Length: 311
Image (cartoon, rainbow, N blue to C red; front, side):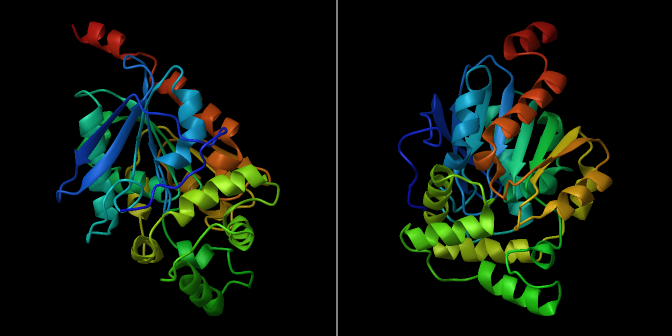
């Protein structure tokens, strides 16, 4: 299980949950789930990416939980969710369905926001009955559906076999990241964040990413390497917004544009100038505002109003 390491103070310190529970996935894997905010408010479900944890969404949780019910969970092997031998896109979809079933009433709708591998989780689950029962709208943030290694700009070379091979070696490394040092921060900032990201932002991301065990990071890197969820994009029929940073090296804007072109109901693409892959940390206000807009447009009723409407 991942070491729990994150900043303790400031806007990126994770708030205390109102409730914690364990959702059980199809293969028996247990997933750590947190619920924040008022019980009767519109629900938002936040799905983090590769090597991250619930702590990654701290800024969004703190803002949204004032007037939203916010559900966050640790992907298997990340945060407080134990590692599993099953590392597949279908496994991610199973996990999301399990979390939705454990936290939402039958028929209750929510806005789902997925960052990076979290967005891929949403795409993998798009055709599932549990997803369609509960998803009112989606935000895909800093993500892509296929050709992730081929399109990555982490290795500063021209596109081709050499860049792809080197990128695969870098992202799939088995080496532990070690402690968060000045050199480690510089490497993380270069690979995953925009040039204008503040030391506070870099520190928050570094502590979260470095907490992910090397074996978990390596196992999921292979899944991302061969990922092809183009079919999932076409099945994502709910209103879907896309957000990407113009300085994203991990999933550059070419992915966001491809998603927008393929989505059945794309409701806008936001390209955040100078922002890297860690958009929810680098541009928290912009990401949170987009989530709020989706809730206002597609989840107008709180739980009490839903119950009254069904009475």
